[in-house]
Every structure is written in structure tokens, then in C-alpha cells.
Image (cartoon, rainbow, N blue to C red; front, top):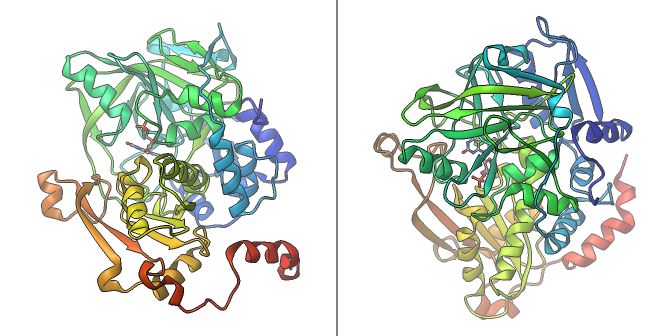
Length: 481
Ligand SMILES: Cc1cc2nc3c(=O)[nH]c(=O)nc-3n(C[C@H](O)[C@H](O)[C@H](O)COP(=O)(O)O)c2cc1C
């Protein structure tokens, strides 16, 4: 096994030993938990938090917040042996790790800890779990934030996992909001267009690696179970769900099974979204009729409410998404890609930077356009910046310096119109929103030294990137206090 934990409990044990876990008790579900989540998103190096002992709920029914809130925990979660790696080193680890990535299908087992407690039929009661109202204007409590929704493609048979939010409508019903175009949405649509119910399982408490597979855009047809198994170097143990037959993680904290029916909807939202706004509002959405609930003793709900970016999910996924982008560009056969970074502050989508060693006329524009069309940056992207290789693309100050000193606004920016957006985009005009037109425009900013006179561009008064990183290794300690 290449990752040092098998489930969330083992992950927590190590994080506690690392001194990065805090426990807090007696918090209010209507306000306190949401306030704490908001602070953790905007705090650097915040600990992971276990919240316990909610009034009216069983002691031990807990909520975990902020698993990815420090670089050390991100390193540990993804199996990087160097826990004190800095941002650039950690990204290098992800890029190298991704090169070795294989797919390992899940292993079916007869049972597992998730089956320690079972509720079926009339006994199904999701109100036994403490579920917060996460943001001050949310339409209700959301049980599914750090969740993975499991569905099977009815034609092709493969299983998709996606993090799609779930409003707690009542004891036996949860909301099922998926943005159109996401793979779970396409699978659900296939059932609905045939007039058939869509079988669904949802895991509300998985380990950070399995959760990451669900929040990462993988190619169509690739099951996140196989991807997580490949990264772990060992298959994920799953149980055949008694109600739906879907594979459910054997070591999960809480899992539900049920069905969503064509044409059956309930009012969903509003819910604070990853852009930091309530853009998509509230509307009728499909829901899930919950037939069974399974949970471990003292279950832990993984809470990951979207906040103004970068929030917890962004702090974790910026590495994997950036590594995927760099690999995507290189595998297209484009020469000279030196680095890529999907900024957490843009929800890992709205602002993407790529550095290159320029090799031919038009190279920078090619890279900018190719980055925009990648799966990583296509959905609700906004700005793509291309820089020379001396710029540290993971450093916003550096990227802005390149934009401010190497671009000519009138000639350095290409615009693209009618690109893929979403109801969650706050910049969709009221008219387009009313008409259901969820398209946006993009700016490809070429912040490289102009190819034709690159040799005449004034020399920077600092050394190259490699030399600077070495300086920081050598003398960085002088700046710690
Ligand atoms: C915490 C969190 C919550 C998310 N909530 C939703 C959601 O409610 N609906 C949605 O369509 N995507 C949501 N996403 C984004 C998708 O999970 C993500 O784009 C994922 O890669 C989609 O999986 P797919 O490619 O298998 O469709 C969320 C992501 C995170 C990190």
C-alpha cells in the first residue's frame, strides 16, 4: 500500500499523532458549525477538527472538518513520503505519482465496518445524524457535502463516483443536485429518459483519497474506484449494496442506498457554492428515496461545505488538478511544458497558469488554448495565463508580475466566447440565466516574453527559478521565526 491509511479512522489516528487534530464539543448545528467551517477555509495551516456531542444527538456521532487544511496533511493524504514538502515539491510529487498511475478495480468483500449498524424500511432515519446548516442563507441542512454519490451507467455498466451535494429533506429523503454535464448527471439522465428509477448509493464519510477520486474530473468511462485503488496501490474493499447492487465502500463511515425517480422532484437550495456565492438559487430537483442506511459505530460525517475559494476541497485538489493539467498538455505532444497550476483561489477552475520554455512562434498561444480545452479547465474556466519558465506558476505574485510586465493588454489576450459555464457561475446575466443559457467567455493571457524579440527583452534582476528555489532551501531558515 502506497498510502498510509485504509480508512478515515486510520487517517485520523496519524493526523492526531502529527499534532494536527483538534476536538471541539457542544457546537450548535444551525450556526456554530458553519461559522467554524468558514474560519477554517480562510485560515492557513488550520488543524483538522472533529466536532462531537451535539445536543439531542448520540455522543460519538461526529463531524470532521478541514481534512486538507495544511500542506502536511495533503502530503500524508496522497502518500507523499516527504511531509514537510513545500508547494512546489509537493506538486512535483503529484506529477511524478500521476505518471505511474494505474487502475486497480475494487475488491468485493462480504461485509465490513460500515455494516455495524443497519436501518432499513420504516427504521430509516437520517435525522439521527447531526447535520448542520452550513451557510447563513442555506435553504436547509445538507448531509452531503464531503460525499460521494455512486451510480452505474445503465448501458456501459461502469460505476461513477461524484461529490454532488445532498440536502436533508426529511428522515427518509435527500436532495440530489448535479450540474448538467457531470458524469453522474449523464448516467441519471439515461435512466430517466427510459422512465426507469436511478439506483443510487451515497457515502457521507469516506477517507480523503477515496473522496478525492469523487471530486476529480476523470475521463468518461473510468471508475473512481479503480483510480483510487490505483493511487493506493491496493484495491478499495467494497460490498455489494443489498438494495441497489451498487458497490459501497466497506470501510466507509455512513452509506445510504435508494432510488431517484423520473419526474419526481423537491425544492432544493439555495446552498452556498464553490464560487463563494448563491448563484444557482433554489429550484425543483430530483431527490433520493432512501431505502437503507448503514453506518459504523460512532459514525463520522465528512463535512466539506463550499466556501469562498480557496476552501478545504481546493486546498487538496489544486495539486491533483494541476498535475493532471501538466500531464494532459504534455501527453498532447506539446513540447516545453515546465509547470501548471490550477489556483485554489479560483476553485481550481477560474484561474489557471502554465509555464513553458518557448520553442517556436505561437507556442504560448497553443498552450493557452490547449489548457482551456482540457477537462480540468473547461467547465466554468475564466482566465488562462501562459508564462515563461522562470515564473513560479504556483506563486500568484510571480504570475501577476509576469502579466504586469510582459503583456501588452491590446495584443496579449485572446478571447473565446460561448464556452461551457454553469448555473453556479455568478457572472451569468439575469437574462441568460432566465433563458437557461449557461455559457461564458474566456481570456487566454500570453504573459511570455514576445517570441520575436525575446532575446532583447530586459534581463530580470533576479536569477532563474531553479536557482531561486535552491536559495530558499539554503537560506529559508533565516526567515522563519
Ligand atoms: C465539496 C464539493 C462539493 C461539490 N458539489 C457538487 C454538486 O453539488 N453538484 C455537482 O454537480 N458537482 C459538485 N462538485 C463538483 C464535482 O464533484 C466534481 O466536478 C467531480 O469531478 C464531478 O465528477 P464527475 O466528473 O464524475 O461527474 C463538488 C465538488 C466538491 C469538492
